[in-house]
Length: 309
Image (cartoon, rainbow, N blue to C red; front, side):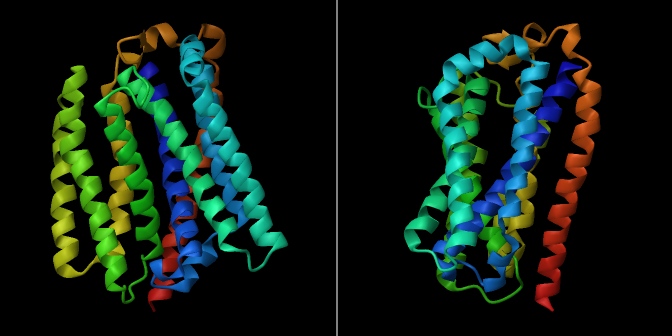
């Protein structure tokens, strides 16, 4: 039961991460229009995209209900990160409304603030996740620092790759930027992440998850070569999004039996029986949300296909 609960929570955070990565990409192209091979790429973003924060709120609420036994410890160690994450949401919402409804041609400063705010919340939430996985603050270990870099490069790569999903000519500078981001991200996931985990004696993945991780790491490098040789840069985002969705789930399952590594177990943190009814409620709420996310992503992909014609 606890494993199912933690997977459900991680899936919600992963969906939020993918959607907010796309938002980051749009913010990059708003600030630097030449980063996309089709100006229409920016049209997919409107203030209604703030609804993606529902996945973040539900994930955090589910964490509080399912594992309220570990909530005090998590908040105690990460209160400032959660505060900054909330502040990032507020700044992003206000700036977004200003850009879309007050100033139709906003200054670059406004777009830059929107970009920074778009990174602030997912990175802070990611730092809380790093604390759960390592048992230490993100800055205290090489593993935490590596995970933080992976999150940053993942957000940037998915965002810019999605902005260039159209089957049109991509400027060489943008193409090489994507290749560089992809290569750094792949090296962080495939080499440094397992290697730095040894410093904490963390088995990053255990069998049979080790096989899945090996397949992901290998296919990441292989796909990079394929995309480079076949000039399939516009399809890069599909593979990257799949990996970015799967890796957090693998890490969460691998963390068992802990909620906080070497500190609080899932069984100890799991809520009292009074909270367990939330599993049913969670499923009822979660299923429509996930279906909505699937529909939203599917609609974006259809939009990309129409733009190719």
